[in-house]
Length: 271
Ligand SMILES: Nc1ncnc2c1ncn2[C@@H]1O[C@H](COP(=O)(O)OP(=O)(O)OC[C@H]2O[C@@H]([n+]3cccc(C(=O)O)c3)[C@H](O)[C@@H]2O)[C@@H](O)[C@H]1O
Ligand SMILES: Nc1ncnc2c1ncn2[C@@H]1O[C@H](COP(=O)(O)OP(=O)(O)OP(=O)(O)O)[C@@H](O)[C@H]1O
Ligand SMILES: [Mg+2]
Image 1 (cartoon, rainbow, N blue to C red):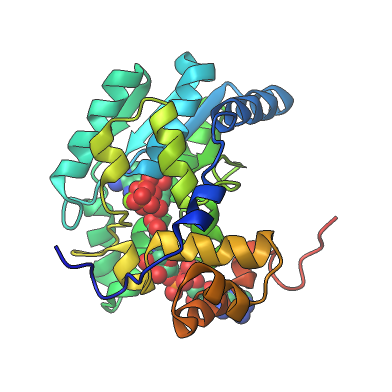
Image 2: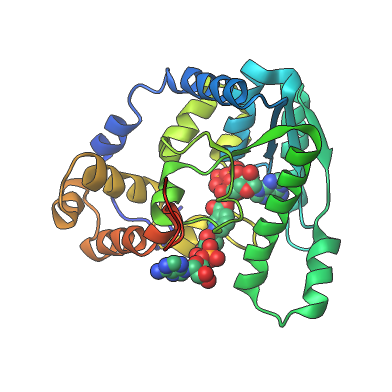
């Protein structure tokens, strides 16, 4: 089968280097969770479980150390979420033996839409923000911390909804590129179909991450790794990774333009 148009040939050595030894990451995530729950005095954690690989890894890491204190919220919007995602999320909850609630957010999103002019992107981000509100509802109700599952690739590109899925008390995957998350998922026993499925925010029908981003995660991870972790300039990284230079420049442009999503709001004190 021909590769989709947003995928270009790639230097596999770079990817092999960055996904090299992933054996310690699951333990690190467990330590971070225990430390944050311990220090805050929280009763446990709550996380959104979509059926995608990021939240599956977060849930599996949490189940290892806080099985009885982990609540997974499965929150499809039945107007746009594929049913297969909910089936995968519920299957994982069963396998991990963690507590869960299934809540269809479609009536909530529809209620907003009664009063707001239509816009696909704004409504898509609203879905992420409705999920955030429900996560914090349960955090308040049951004394839990909200655990976010944005990976390093998404965070560095700003590929998340500000104050939506980007809002949390603990970011569990922020140190792992998407390629690393997929490998750690294997160590944690996440089912193969969740690991290999195409990444998607499902904020609207037919929404696919790599299509919207215009590059594959392998390309994105290689460029971000070579520039930000290994200190190459963008064109050097593009040549090193065998990636089209305009694509590499676009990736780094997304990184620069999204700096505001990784910082406190302008004017807010940082201490
Ligand atoms: N320079 C600046 N300084 C300070 N603030 C700035 C700003 N530029 C924009 N802003 C603010 O940021 C807002 C835009 O950010 P935002 O509301 O997030 O919206 P935006 O970045 O336009 O959209 C979110 C993106 O993340 C993707 N996403 C969302 C959720 C989950 C996932 C996933 O992978 O699962 C992916 C989604 O597909 C979309 O591409 C602006 O409306 C403005 O309020
Ligand atoms: N239907 C859903 N139910 C519960 N939480 C959700 C749902 N959709 C998204 N989320 C939350 O928003 C986060 C961001 O979604 P995102 O699509 O980036 O992650 P993912 O689905 O776990 O993995 P992938 O990025 O590979 O699709 C998820 O990790 C999850 O916590
Ligand atoms: Mg997803």
